[in-house]
Image: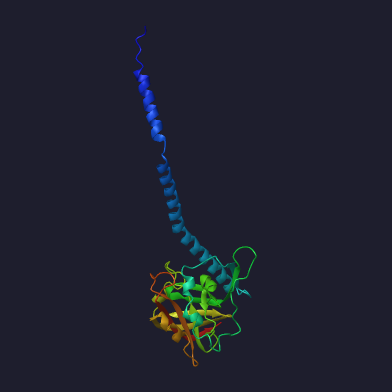
Length: 267
């Protein structure tokens, strides 16, 4: 009779069974793993999505600016109404769209709206009309100007308030822009424009140069009285954006205002 001890074989089988048991995931472990993957995916999305949206907005603004600078006869950009959305933009539609709606010069004959047009397939399309460009060397700003201040125009441009004076007219031209949170985007650095700085408006083949003489902050409820004040004797510019920067989207309680007077027309 062979003197064979099978304990070694049994021990190996026990070890293999233990390893297989450890490899098996119980339902709770699987659920936690799936939840972890989902949370990671959402976290990545919320980190990356604003960057993608900002890049798309900047690309659209550059496209419109390129058309304006190339003297296109009809510089426009068209996109889906649910695209290029700015956080808080619905709440941003405030007093300067409605206060003083009875003004006589609200329709200057040169403003086209950017209301959505149905395309029969999903969200309607919207067209933003470019009218010129704005340059503020002191804060390295170069942006297209749209001829309206609706939510669509302000997504891709600085908007000229239609009820205000155009560059070639006597009065104050009012321009609104989003104060994007990313450094230097749109009117992000408007508060840093110093007294004595130049602002250039290129419009219909001419450059209008303005010298900044005021930079101040007001409560949002005072905005209408300044936007609609009378100016029948000079050509001025008023630039407006939200303040402070860390306010919840669409709920900024104050506004930064930069004003200047016309010093030169060239071109």
